[in-house]
Image (cartoon, rainbow, N blue to C red; front, side, top):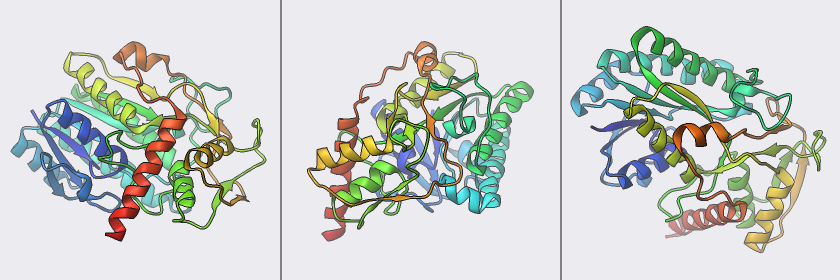
Length: 329
């Protein structure tokens, strides 16, 4: 039976679509294309342009395509933007998710896989941070995602909906076969931005905060390759189909790199030196956050295949070159 992928034309969602199709699944994509790109979707995927918060539309898609599982990626995801415009984030990420969950229950959907975030932890007291650590998001982005986690938990108790919330750490890289990647031109992802600077698409790279209590003063993050992340969703789907319980799991590798270490890797892989400008800290950014990553391996049998920063940076650079060539054609 088909899987409904909300936000499936976006960065992470499009990689999930590829993994599902590669596994022989039927896929229906719902995306409003506010940040996604229909051009990255394979012909085998059924695409509907629309709003994930439109309950009538979601109910119609569930009925027409006999959907019995939803992978929910559609969201606004820029932390500083959420601090500046919190109501937009609560509307897009919490209210629309609430409508989606209602439609899922009314339509008889049994399983939901939710794209959550490590931002629910805020500034953790220690690293690596486990799933049972206190939750204290620093931004409306993190709070809006936590609200949806709670909605799914409550809907599970009341209606029997089973779900897995995957708390992503920093997603990076591109499909190893070059079929998809981060396509938003002004995306804020560090590796994407650094690759663009290395290739002459941006004049310089800003590093937001160089006075954090870390080894070199810049933020430390756990970078997870996007195809590995999509495969974690596939494992989550298999777990639910096999009758597994609802879960909340970290998605990361269990070790981190500082911003300045990532910048040096981009310079090394690209063979280009480029200007790096220190800038003030951004609101909502914790100093360091690294996943305690054992639970997802134990519960889902997930094993990463691309946990190598050199490979991740190489993929990002290759995708960026592909985008530049496409624009020049």
